[in-house]
Length: 332
Image 1 (spheres, rainbow, N blue to C red):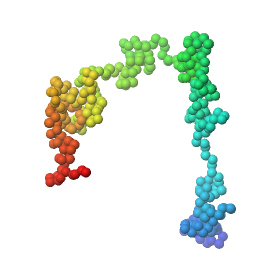
Image 2: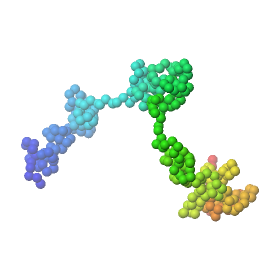
Image 3: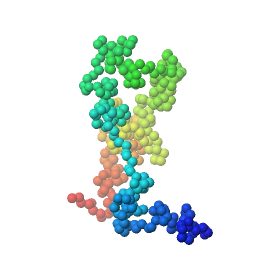
Image 4: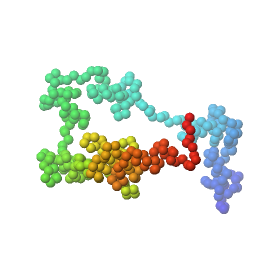
């Protein structure tokens, strides 16, 4: 226990439970009311019996001797008489005199209307419906350019430079590849487009990650089935990754006609077309599976009986799940 006593005159309590040289009682008064010598302020349901200590305020006391409004200002601004900080205008007004519209984000301080006028006419105060007249001779106004005028008095090239770089006289982007440089792929004489490759090899790199990758478009039906499927090691299913219809069955285009992928897979594996009216059954009950070992030919009746046996037949599923002696529920 500390041998020091409270620094408040007349208090002989120890400072061990307090701080700042005061005992616990005076330290708590200072923490709560800001003054170690303050008298205890009545709180809770008796606070209505006291009034705010701020001059001119007759509201009921809330905390620290102040009403709720002045206490809130002290909690937010550090001063019970502090004034709220003015908020920034959420949507400032247009910088054009006499226009009270809100500014457009990224519009240079103008509203959308004046910003669009500046974009099309180069002047936010341009009159409505008036376009910049083309030159009398219809030729680009850039010195030395004899191309036909397209917009803003410039030809298509200078107008596009202005749209891209903000200046119709800006130099065009210079390629880092010398004119006539050929593709870096051996045996390819195409002009370089990017990364040292010609356009076709660059697109193969973008698509497949390798500029020398073989084109994967087209191929036989068996190759397409293998390309757009992957093996599930847990079930052994060969899952179709291409387009699917609403029930989850894969779809593949054969001779410009959409067909079910699992039916095509069965036909490819067995080397013949399905019999008229026949269907393909899934032993794994996975609609996206095209593994031939999981597929079998059957009739619609076989498919229905298989669905009933596996309790997957809609209303029959309800019937199959009924316990012995249980009646079907009646629906009003």
